[in-house]
Length: 80
Image (cartoon, rainbow, N blue to C red; front, side, top):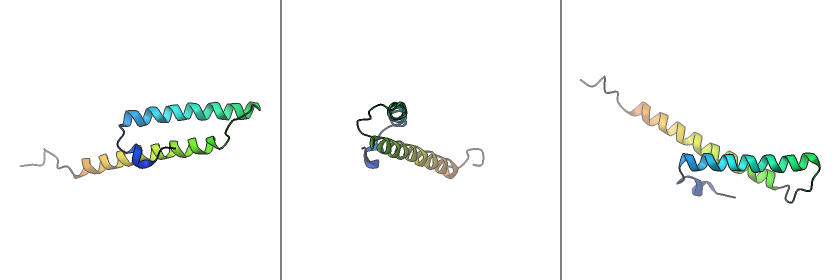
């Protein structure tokens, strides 16, 4: 399981790719479980869901920070 402090230095592209990979893995595990197949580690579902949520939270924090910085920046049209 990856920790938030390990995710923060990653680029948005890397985090987005990891989210896609984890979603695919989660779908595979859920499908195996639904079909009645043998799931090696059913707890992996919970770990994947939490990791996806962490990554989405970090992306959301970055979006909020960018919006906040954009609001703080003075408009060039208002400068006399």
